[in-house]
Image 1 (cartoon, helix red, strand yellow):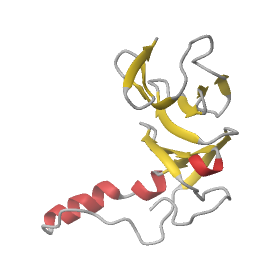
Image 2 (cartoon, rainbow, N blue to C red; image 1 turned 90 degrees about the horizontal axis):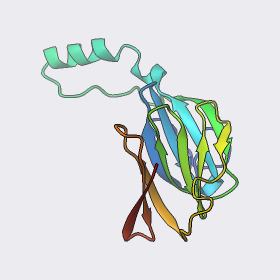
Image 3 (cartoon, helix red, strand yellow; image 1 turned 90 degrees about the vertical axis):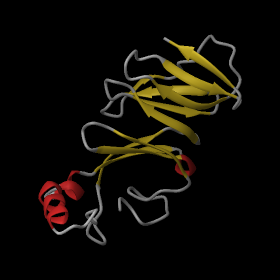
Length: 151
């Protein structure tokens, strides 16, 4: 379990809308109701996991349970200033967040790299965003029924 509490403080969530898992053992959550992105380091939850899985297999069990009450550590909190609809990570670990009529790009350190990828484009409402890991192409759904791609 990452967090078990609803709320507005660091580590708490209010209406989470999307989640991504990075290769650096981070779970990045679009905390929609709080208008922010929170990144959780799950390394503490995984420590000793390989040994536990080997033991479980030897005993004929299929899975390993995370310790009750175990929590990941919040390692980053970004105030986006608006409700976050969707979130994805690009191959460099940058976070693309859809809010209002914008796609904002934040670096792994939380610094704003681009205020609006849609600047100068006539797109009304973006519902979702996806970054193709192979090409880096940003694909989005517009008003839930069409797809557009950005380079």
